[in-house]
Every structure is written in C-alpha cells, then in structure tokens.
Length: 297
Ligand code: TA6
Image (cartoon, rainbow, N blue to C red; front, side, top):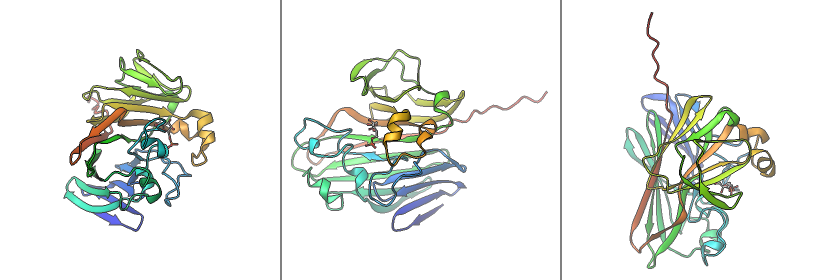
C-alpha cells in the first residue's frame, strides 16, 4: 500500500491491487477519484476547479454545517449553500491503519475558510476518516462540539456516482419512503418501485431505514451500493439539461447522462450536539459484481 502526499492531495493505493486507489484533494477533503480495479466509480466534471477557487464539481464534496441555503436560522442563514467544509483546506492527519489503508483529515475553526467560519462562531473539530477496501470505500465523519453551547448542524456526503446512461439507470430500495421534492416543493410517499430519470431530479428521501442498501442499477447491472451509518436521509439528484447548462463548472454539458448523486446525510432536520459531545456517521460505497459462473456443459 502506498500513500503519496503532495501539497494539494493525497493518493492511496491498495496493497493488494495497485489498480485500486483513492485520491483526496486537501481542499474540501474532497475525494476526487475512487478507482476499483482500474475502473473509476465517481463522476468528476472536466471543468471542476481543483485549485481551491471553488468547491469541487464531482467526487464526494462534504456538506457541513448546513445543507442547501438556510433561510431562517440566525447563524446558518449567513453561510453559503452547503456550508464551508467543502470550501476549506483540511489538514492531512496521516495514516491510521495499514490494511485496509485508512487515512484521516481534520478541520477546525483555526484552519477553516476564515471568511466563512467567522459567520458561524462555534468551536468544533471535524475528523474525516477514509478507508480504502479491496471492494469498498468508506468515508466516515466525526464532529466534536468544542463550544460551550449546543451545536445545530446538517451533515451530507454529496457523492457523485459514475454511471453509463442516466436514462437506463434506476435507484432502488427507496420505495415507500417519504420524500421532499425540492423542485415541486412538496412532500409525499414515493410509491414508485424504483427512481428513474427523465428530467431534473432533486429529491430528499427522509428517514430511510438504515438497513436499506440504496442500489444504483444500470442496464440491469448493479453498479453501486450505498450503505449508511447514522445518516437517516438520502438525496437523489440529477441536474439534467438546463441545470447542467447553467453550471459553469459542469462539463461536458451532457455529463448529466453519466452521473447520479446519491447523497447520504442528516438534512431533513438538524443534529443538535451538546457541548463537549461527539457525533459520527459514515457511508460505505461498494460495487456489486454479478458472481455468475457459467455451468460447464
Ligand atoms: O444535493 C442536491 C443539491 O442540493 C441540488 O439542489 C443542487 O443545488 C446540488 O445540491 C448542487 O449544489 P452546488 O452548490 O454544489 O451547485
């Protein structure tokens, strides 16, 4: 296993397979690539800014302390959409396990984006742990409230998954779940057996049982499985034609055909963490291979 650190990023290669690797940009502690046996699992815009000038368009941006643009909380409403974790350069804390290779990144008010963190004057310690398995990637977060008052926050992994064709892709295991449609601005129970895509989709699935593995299936093949730990919600997003056209850092413009966001989070209400307490959560991404062995005639 190797860990290569440069000024801007860290690359981890699995000890058992040099074609399995993960790349983390220190800016936003953003996973920008996860290759499983040489095959890229994430989508990254070819116009993504990787120089710290704006949050990365693709990979796994981190959303904290607020999901979306808050309109009514005194402090959170001052922050930009999705908060400041993805706009801050995190500290690489090093390797914590050799197999599966596991590394950590940290963020606190002293090193966070100073222009933004001053808008949210609470003391905190974030530790992101990234574990590269032979056939999975686990990203885990620990939030410590180092303030003297309760800390109210959202957390979300804004995961951009690579797919082959959005119109031939479905997201399963969300049937019967309550969903808030961010476009219709209304809530309902989703009775569709699977989520399919034929227009912009921006749905917050709420309180999804933690034993529900969310699966992305493309052309009948299981492409991705998303397991959540302590993250009750899952956002499903595809920008489709017009929204893609309107994002300067979204390229190629038809790239929406090759990505779907499945975003584990705690976003339909706030985590309220008492002083001195810690909160943790994780997503585990894996690729389900069809283990089909033809029976010799
Ligand atoms: O997670 C879905 C979402 O909240 C969408 O509403 C869309 O805004 C997307 O995030 C991307 O947001 P961004 O700030 O990265 O352009």
